[in-house]
Image (tube, rainbow, N blue to C red; front, side, top):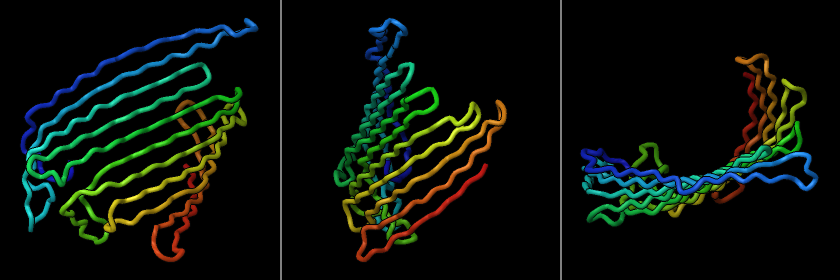
Length: 236
């Protein structure tokens, strides 16, 4: 939860239910080869009862409160000979007794895809969406806590393409874009994006060489055209 010291955890109920899992095999019209795909869905729910004697971690204003956190989750996965895709979702509902100003309803979503195009090349894609709440300010070095929680939305996408030059050499091109919006003036909205190129050479089963060149730009949502460019290189 948001700060504080958990003195007691009265109970945790955790259950995991595999709702369904199916596999489908289909033969192509030409009858030359067969393709199969498998779907799997699982869910989970967790409940926590807690107590914090200082929710804000503040010396000047100590707020103690009991709270309840309910967090259902789900995982959906699809696999086939040429692709893998997965979706994960977590939904958190937090309630503070006698201090509703700290209540929150948050969502965390994640999607990943690996799709083979040919025997040598493939596409990769990832996406994340976060709707979260926080009590902390970043406007000063003390990291002070606020009297009321506020929401923020953070989402990003990352497409990529990989190609096997040889059985031991691989090159990849990827991009990244992130956008963060806060529901308060205590924090600064921003965008962060850029491309990168990766190269990998497999030396043996235990060792490989990796090289990366990247460029990223950080643009805060502030008056003027202030931005920061970061150029990076890595060899490992």
